[in-house]
Amino acid sequence: MMKKFLSALAIAATALVATPSSYAQETSIATVVKIAGIQWFNRMEEGVKKYAADTGSNAFQVGPAQADPQQQAALIEDMIAQGVNALAVVPMSPEALEPVLARAMKQGIVVITHEAASKQNVAYDIEAFVNEDFGANLMEQLAQCMNGEGEYAVFVGSLTSQTHNQWVDGAIAYQKQKYPKMKMVGDKNETFDDAQNAYERAQEVLRAFPNVKGMQGSASTDVAGIGLAIEERGMEKETCVFGTSLPSIAGQYLETGAVDGIGFWDPSVAGYAMNKLAQMVIDGQKVTDGMNLGLDGYEKVKLDGKVIYGQAWVNVNKSNMADYPF
Image (cartoon, rainbow, N blue to C red; front, side, top):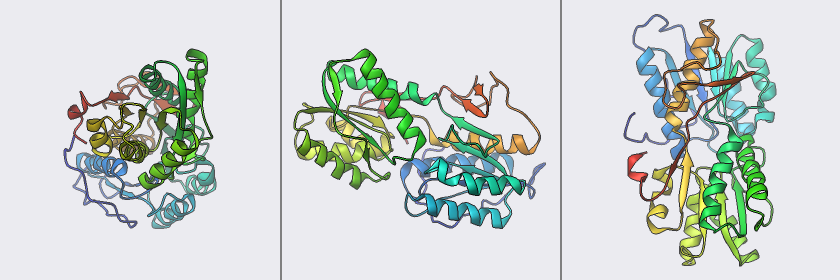
């Protein structure tokens, strides 16, 4: 794994210079992410670049300046016009991208997605794990921290983000089954993958529900915004905060106790996996249940229709975050 983060992405793609290989100059794979310039997708770009270096393919990553499905669709249209061989997409809104990805497939472009298990116009969608199980895992930690009772709130990057909603829906269902003394307050708080928005939504929750004891975030930036709100109010000991993030994003709040724990999978491995799958499809290879993709967390994948599930999540808190230097 590369150990340094890359600089923020520009909207325009930066093509990686290919070295000669059996399919160099033939395969162009564009990874299109939700938004450029945030650490989660900077880390994913490391995996895309590593794939390019390992294989000699022209693999590169682009993303819109804002987390906007229309901007993302426009980027995909641009990639289609450029004649790429494959698209590896992390959709902001899976439904919004169905038409443009359908057009890509009609033109013979291979489509691989990530965080979009319901996608129809794909060769495969790859998930790091079963999303509802990951949400339940976060809820179990939140419940343990809250001693199994009290009010909590949930946050999603977008109300149209399939994975974020699967995580919180899985968490809520698990809470209702296992921890009936806990209660969700308010609706899903939408943050648009922006820490400032998460901070503002957290402040609103704290004002509206002064007895709230827990918060669960979904976008990688959610717990950073929530943690700042908790820190400003000096409520580190009275509240429990868990969510999807990275140590590089949430580490300072894990240190202070404003955030109690995070879960994640390595975006660089997911980026590499999407590109590897794209080439497999181009080469006429099929994924089989139990296949080893040769990547950490994807050694024995589960195949459900077009969806590939790994076993790639990790739970991190203050005590072990140094083990994950990204």
